Image (cartoon, rainbow, N blue to C red):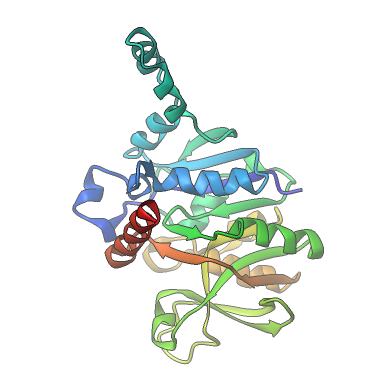
Length: 270
């Protein structure tokens, strides 16, 4: 059973400058909720019970938001506003934190959770990616495939060929129900992408991935690339991909973030 999840939230958010200088992109509002709360809700709705959030020194706002505010609750009670306390309710999960002291990449951030996951399979949810699926949870689709295969599973989406340079891209054997057995994975191919199947920010990993993250040679910017560890994992075991249902929005891209907000407000009006 997949009951643990890691949410890497330590990056500088340079695509969102200048606002990310003071407000983490994970705290960008979607209506009255920050993006990271939507991601946590997706995890909890998929059966996740324990969440480790990887933060940096500048991400204290995330921790403050997810903490209880006894002072605020007391104020609401004393001022006959107790009905507003329900707005402070957060998803029911045990939330832990650890800091990534240096910006050494996504792979390094995930590896910081090695002791947290132990010998258990775990999910990884990137809080840049907000996935709206009215028929259920995107993460649950990956968990279901993991249950059937006992293998690591990667979330996928089909993109235009000119967009593949912005993603990790897989090649694989198509099975059924938009599921694939991976043959290879390439990080941001500039030419000749192996397919139009791009990796998005949802994963289920067996704990073996941690050993491969330890062995990966740092790449560009001295960062540990998750893609390189997945390539190594493919040498010893099967990895699957699933084209997710629903619509994915990358809130690190202003145009996509605005599309998400537009969708949210249209749904409020309908």
